[in-house]
Length: 370
Ligand code: PLP
Image 1 (tube, protein in one colour):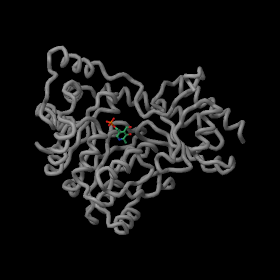
Image 2: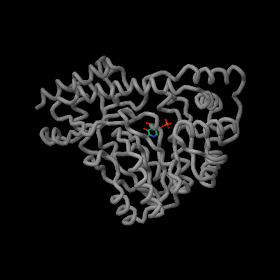
Image 3: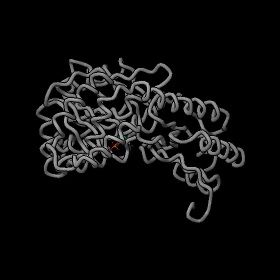
Image 4: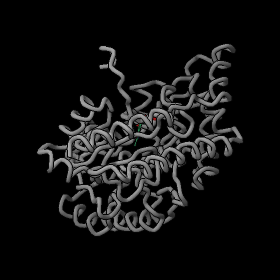
């Protein structure tokens, strides 16, 4: 539509609109200029692995020993290598919806069987321990993928909720792959607590993290996988065959990120996202048919309940998203993509000007179609 000259506002992308911080980008440039462009150790340079463990401790309070972390080419490859290391053919892996789109396919690629646990909007999209226990038993599941703060709902599980889920995971013999890539982006007093910070579950939990979202490093392709030594080492051996080493230049940039004293900088970006989040919550509250309950508290997404509107219009979330695109020229993502039919995701990782234009168009669309 844009190519045809139409003015489309896209709130579909899951990436920050901020540039990579200067001190990070410059470290990458410097690596090129100084010839730091050769192969490295396949699981990341020892200096970066050490710095990343310190970063994780300082950022999320998780102590990691030598050998418990490898560097990967982003969070997605970290998930992929971890699943290849953990999943045997036919193993069932539980994935609570709404879920990030890649999880089921990554489980399948590893030879496993993804089992999606239906979304629970009435629980603020946080999985409840009883459901987990029932599903783990029913499917004789081997693993569980957690993602809080969540893409696409923005849900943040409280420390008590994470602990309760981990207790069930331990009881049922599940390993847990916790994708914490949005861990630095929580708002309004919400507390992020890493699944790796519960000692009783340490030998069952693998963590995925990095600066992709907090430091606008989406294109650098760099991230971390942490957890029990044998599993992390196995993931590293797989990586050594399929990737070689993570990009040397990006490792230099990640080292600058880990070594920087940049809490204020991260906080400033978080505050900017929070301002947009508040604005979206406030200004969509009056739009008939787009219900945001509860308000998102993490990441940079809002997941609207449009089930009533879909019923009234005789369509589903895919059809409604298509109509919004064609009639209001706003691009959003249908909940079906995240196994949350009846919902629509808006990403507020966009300028205030774009948010204002999009919300204005949505409001007019909603009035017109009622
Ligand atoms: N995990 C979640 C929940 C995401 O939303 C995304 C990107 O949108 C990723 C992982 C991918 O991160 P990376 O770009 O570091 O591979």
